[in-house]
Every structure is written in C-alpha cells, then in structure tokens.
Length: 370
Picture 1 (cartoon, rainbow, N blue to C red):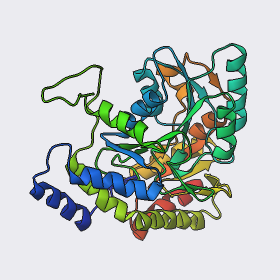
Picture 2 (picture 1 turned 180 degrees about the vertical axis):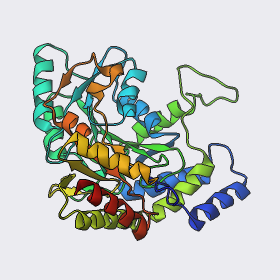
Picture 3 (picture 1 turned 60 degrees about the vertical axis):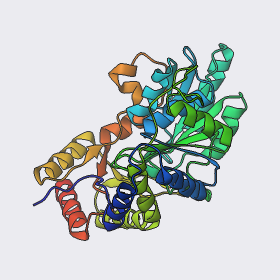
Picture 4 (picture 1 turned 45 degrees about the vertical axis):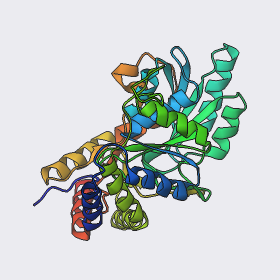
C-alpha cells in the first residue's frame, strides 16, 4: 500500500492555478502583489496591522526576538516542549536560552513554573529580555495567566504560533495574544507555502522594521547602501500566491483535521491511550492528533507496527532541556514534558488523508495495544 504520511500538504487545483497566475504575471522575484495580498489576508484573519511575510517561521522568530530588543548576552525564557527552531533563534541573537516545562492540562508552558523562573531571575538580577511561549500542536497556551506574570516584570512575550494558525484562545485568534507573534507555513503545517512564515505585530512600525531587516537592511538609495546588518528573509511572490489559496481553504482544512481526531477518539474508546487535553478556553485547530500510551514500550511497539505497514508516526517533541545542544542551559522542569516525550506519539493527521487511511492506522494501534 502507498505510504501514509503524518501531515502531508493539502494542495490542489486552487493552489496550482494561483501559482501559475503569479508565474504568468511576471512577478517571480521575492516581491510582488501576492506577497502584499497574503499579508493583507492574514491581517484580516488575525486582526493585527503589522504583518510581514518571510521565508520561514524560524526567520520570523529571529526577527521577533530582535523586535523586542534581544541582544547578545541577554537571557530568554522559552517553552521546553517544542521544536528546536524556537531555541535556535535565541542563539542566532547571541542570547542565552532557559527552559520552562509544560502543564498537564494543555501541554503548553506551565504558568506556575514560569512565575517561579521569573521570581528567581529577578532575585539574581538576571531577568530575561523576553519569554517565548509556544502554541503546541495547534493549541494556544494560557495567555490570561502568562501575560500578567511576564508584564509584571516588564518582560516581553513572543507567541510562537508556528503550529496554531486558525486556533483560538477564549475566542481570540492565535497569533494575536502576545506582544509579537510568528506563524509557520512549512510543508507539514496546517497550511503551507512549501516553506515560509510570518511575523505579526499590533504595531505597524514593528512590522516595517522587520520588513527592512528582512530585505538586507537596504537603505532607500539608488545604489545599494547599508548602515546595519540585514537578512535575506522575504517570502517569494510565487510562494505567497500558494499561501493565499491555502488560506482561503483554512476552515475546510481545520474541519477535516478535527474530524480525523474524532475518528481516532471513537476508535480508541476501549484502548488504553490518552489524547492531548483540550481546556475549555482552547479553540484547537486539530493540527496533529497526539496520543499518550501507558508505557514507553507500548508507544514504541505501536510506532514499529505502524512503520511495518508503511505508516509514518513520530514521538512527541523531545524537550529542549534534554537536547544535547542545550543540556547545559538552565531549566525549570517537573518532568511533565519528559514523560510526554517518553510515552507520546503523533498519529497521521493530514487533511488529505481519507477515512480508509485513518481506519488502517486505528486498526493497527488497537490490535497492538490489545
């Protein structure tokens, strides 16, 4: 049978036609009307006026950190339970990352541990310049608790919403919940531009500064004039065209992923697994259906059984405080994310998967656990 992937791109005629139209328009370079249009489309969805289309979510994180003043030698607190890009961007700035564990109720950053970390940092005169909060697996963190804690110490908050486009927190869109935010349009995300990302800000001047840095910090002169270091971070017009077509289909894509999750929940009603909890304040986008088994051995047996049938699955994120590259950094942890990593698994969740695909996955999980 053909391989079942974890989260393959959901693209078709709409994306192909948009790409060809952009190509035929002659706007091939990384500027053009579709870049501007994509930014306007996301602005309308999120409600923030400062939107900059970039080459990746990682580039957006880098510029977001710079936008709140992170410099070499500064400290930055961030979610430990995340992909490496979140922490890597801190290092791009020459800053020092420190990690905060998850809360069991949403798997996102634990506000109590965050408060503990900031209290200790304040007592030693080492407050971070920023806190980066990840909206994990398409679900927002508890910002009504996190924002006051950080702002009480005058610490900026960056929302890493790379996985959460289309999610909500108490009715507010993901990407509009902190001081500055980022999105990702990588190939496995809820929508994709093949590769790409965005920086989001409630302040147009912040976005203008990011756009300037993303275009090599070029001055407005007829020749190439530069007074500071910039970056080659702008999204191409061709990829922006794909993004606009994808964004128009976002509600349908989210609904299909949520339906896939409901199919798994029904199929596993008698299987000893738990799903990512969804608090009452969360409007989850269904990006990945994640389950936790009773033991690591049970998880590994299921993962091997799926692989045997040419089905992709993946353990939950290995926490950053356990990664060799960051193992020497400070971490405020209670074992939550480590336990999730040891026992958790991401199941195929892409909106292009059909019911037969999901039934195959569910059958293998059920038989392996019985």
